[in-house]
Length: 305
Image 1 (cartoon, one colour):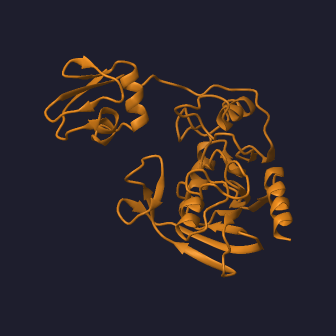
Image 2 (spheres, rainbow, N blue to C red):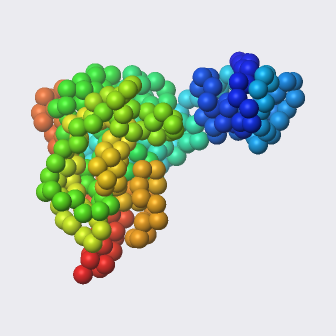
């Protein structure tokens, strides 16, 4: 158990907001969780999450030591597009988390891969992310490459870093994109006001480049193809929102109260291409648009006539 003691220097601030603003690495939700467990006291007394602090009060926050966790194999069906002794290409369904993390310790792609591959997964990213070289979001469907040994992992990771790894997505975005194609070149970093979100920001960021082209226009929406030059967290979602055309159904970066009902972002990793780490042959794979994506396009077709 690690204890932090902080003196409040602001009057009438909620305890959960105060803790999340302190430099101890806790989100507001995490602060509430500790408060509910009685691990936060003010001047020696337990309080609730709505408690408002006064200047000079001492807040003690006790943070439990992290519990070691190792991903376990689970018999979950996989849509395998390609597999050999070194790499595996899988078509991830929408709604599946790629690897275990807080709140998602089972039912992930990694759990399924461990059951399918046994010990034949690279260990470079540790016990929580065996085989995982790159990720796609939970509500993004499509192709993902998995490394079955450390040599393959290193090779694929190098291709991604050097921008020679092909990644193409299809998305439906809000609004009518006027140009037939374009490029968004804007750095992406953690949102300073919300640690769970990313944003275009100059400070503490990494360069990010997304190329896009229009496939078809609908009433109020545009079907586009995106090619990633870099691979930052939430890159397409952040970049499209940045230029005023957020991904349809994006509950984090999207438009509130969209006119066309859709749950979760309409974003699909359609194509990946890479040089095989052993044979040096260039391989490229494509994935058909899933039913949820096609159904949404059909719905847009009807309202656009």
